[in-house]
Image (cartoon, rainbow, N blue to C red):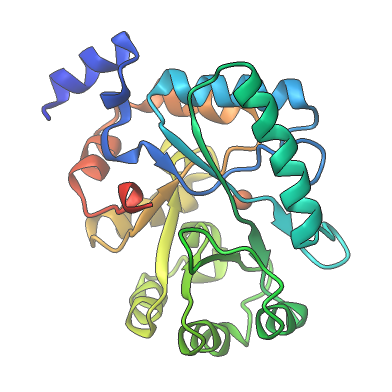
Length: 246
Ligand SMILES: [Fe+2]
């Protein structure tokens, strides 16, 4: 698909508008359970906007962070089922799946060992790191998931400032079996110039496995929409991103 077709389909709101990004694997759309959608009306507004952009499937990944977002697998599933029923009752045609974004700390090891978590696509586990301190147990965690038959997916690798010096850690994680997820709005500069630079480096080195919206508010989708004709998105659409595998 050429760039011209891309622009044209975007205006027509056809499913081809965002091409192979039409499956989103990272979002905070379930109301009232993390720092994403505060109410169901916000959830509906965001899901309609995803639809307008050409998305066909959304995997919802509320935060699970001990002491901050103490969501359990059960409360997440219950809240998701409620939202899904609402979306269906409104006749919105969007495939929905539930998972979570797990913060890497000691409690997460226990959670994995006791199988109290919600993978997406059967065995994929989205996890995030502290933005302040490089975790000491990252490689151990990736090993634990891989050796237990799960596919680790590191959330927004480009956003961790302690890895901004190089892309070596991304290469290392991929060698260990981890997938690299990058946020779509990182290419817009939304998270700052350092994050944008790192996202572009990862793209150039073809290290990005999955692109995600990490949508918390409708503004995230509006920012994305206004940048969809940027070169970075054109390059991303031509890259090896595997969004449509899910
Ligand atoms: Fe997130």
